[in-house]
Image 1 (tube, rainbow over the protein chains, first blue to last red):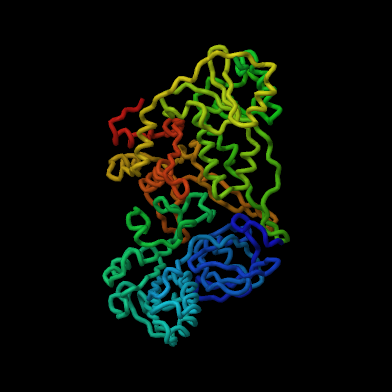
Image 2 (image 1 turned 60 degrees about the horizontal axis):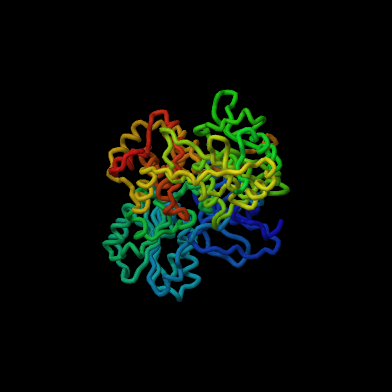
Amino acid sequence: MTSFRDTTSVPLLATICNLQELSGDTTLYRLCLETDAGEPFSFTPGQFVQLSVPLGGEAPISLAGPPRHDNSFELCVRRVGHVTDMLHRHLSGNRVGIRGPFGNGFPLSEWSGRNILLLAGGLGIAPLRSLLYTLLMRRKEFGEITLMYGAREPAAILFKEDLAELSSRRDMHLFVTVDFAAEEYPGGLTCNTGMLPTLLKGVNFTTADTVAAVCGPPALYRCVIEELHALGIPSERIFLSLERRMKCGTGLCCHCAVGDLFCCTDGPVFRHSDLKEIRGSL
Amino acid sequence: MIRDFILHESLSDLLKTLSGFGEVHGPVLSDDGVMTFGPIRAAENLQLNYSRTLLPPKKYLLPPRETVLSFAPDKGYLPPDSAIPMIVLFGLHPCDLQGIAYLDTVFLGDRDDPLYRARRNALTLIGLSCEPDDYCFCGDFSSAGMHGFDLFMRRSEEGFLLTDGTPKGKAILDSLTPHLAESDSGPAARRECNIAETIRQASIRGETFEESPLWDDFAERCLSCGACSLCCPTCYCFDLREYGALDGETAIRLREWDNCLFRTHGEVAGGFNFRKSRQERFHYRYQHKYLGFGPTRGMVSCVGCGRCRQVCPVRIDLLELFKKGSDDKLS
């Protein structure tokens, strides 16, 4: 196995080093790339990889953890289709394939000195977790950091251990909300009931010179943008990570176009001001 | 006087010379009566008066199904190492040459595709002038000189005037010398076509015909059969699919033609679809064809071959958008 292979078209093998079930259908995988030199797998939060499950095929998955100093990285995968269903039958020690990383990622250098609001809905927490931990590792460069995370129900809250730890940090704010709470909420965290936009309305935080990073299902974008504008955050400072079914990752297969932009090469992180005129983008 | 003319009776000499550069393929009638690019067994099988083939020559560069990777547990994923046969494509009309030139910009641009490059390098392109019919509208695309042909044949009464476009074309001409005659034909007549210019102008101003009632009309009739995109010389959307072998351990991954008119094209995991309606899918197709995505932004990829207008079972014709939007009439 050489490390000089073209990783944009030929998947490199990676071993599942660790896996942790986060909810009934979602698991966090730590993958270790099999490279000769074991050089670190570097990427920018917001980028994605093409995950190959041998005999199953490929699916685009966001990087869910911060870049590390070794050849490993984390993916948070929900069992929702053919490829991810096969992945969920894999065990620690099994091998998968990885192409990438692809896409632009969040423009961190541009955010220097600014307050940062992260809004995650459901599985949208995955790329924002990568972003959040990267921001926290470079804490001094940024202003206030706030994470608002909404899940369908208490059982669907992902990364509960991380959240419990984050809630005790003094250098960031954390708000968690669930759409419905029929059951008793598992202890350790304060949690609101209601949708993210409602949460946004009710919370006081600094909005001057704030950038927002949003990731969630399409419905989230439609209702949250208005609230962000009302808080005084303009479209130019709202960054959305879009979901599309990227097949190639290199801007060739033409499945992921948003207007005349490709989600895989021009995105998946877009400024709202670049999307608002594009029909069908959100 | 230069010797650059081949008489009709010397055609088999030309084909024989060309076979030194690869297997010669050209327009032939298939057994089931379909005009198609296929191997030319003998000069008399050649359909030099053809209007258009059903499938464009893109099948030589992007086969409908092509192995891009193979997987084995001990080897991981590996690209194929099969040899690509040398092929001479004979009798390509200017629109099809233009189609290949467009695919070249996509697959040999800043995201060079090694499989495409291998197939493209193995092709020799021999162009042939054509006579327009009721379906095509290529306009001045047809004046030879701007496309990536190796050799172009302009037909006249007695035979063909040959022009070389590349060093390979020059080499072919050189080896043909004994069979060539002198010519005295003048420059090709320029062909005017208003609709080609109308399309170009609409593309430059980023026209989307947002308000046009035609979108609803198209969507109502469309069968989502995808024929328009299948037979388009510049449609190249592809899917990547993995097929496990019966041994349960190895697999091949294929690149297969996909189709933006299909419902699954805009679908993501979990079933959400970004282009659920046929109307949205038409807009997507229009955007790609006439305005371009990513690096092809601003490029019109319609070459005016007329295939989509001819094959659509419900007579949908995107040209109607342009006709409504301007005073120009279809020529």
